Image 1 (cartoon, helix red, strand yellow):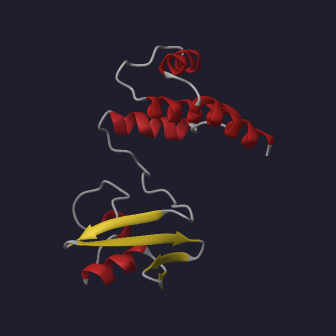
Image 2: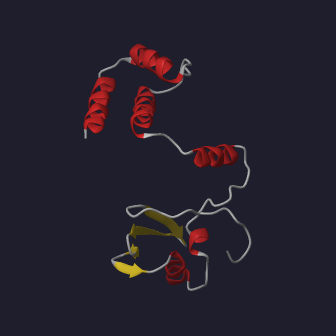
Length: 145
């Protein structure tokens, strides 16, 4: 809890900083001056993220590699990793918006429980789909998954 209190205190400190103070904090955190076009809100969020990574640990090496590959336009293997409970997935289909909540024991859409994303995709479309593909969780093309 002490680390969380420190993060909350840091957030309050950042909220009170003007643009020049945020630029100094950015340079100290990232060893580089921020681009001039960054908003103060973005700088605050990036700085608090940096502090959280310092206190709680940052991205894993595997995730760093995957993000670098994705940024270079390369296909990332295993991109549809497990989805954590509490995640919300949103998909628009034929002009209607569908929201799915991930729970410990499956998925919930409009108060109805489903065991898989594929079952939800079938419910929405009336056709067999790969659920992860339907919700954009992987980037494979073609049919099946």
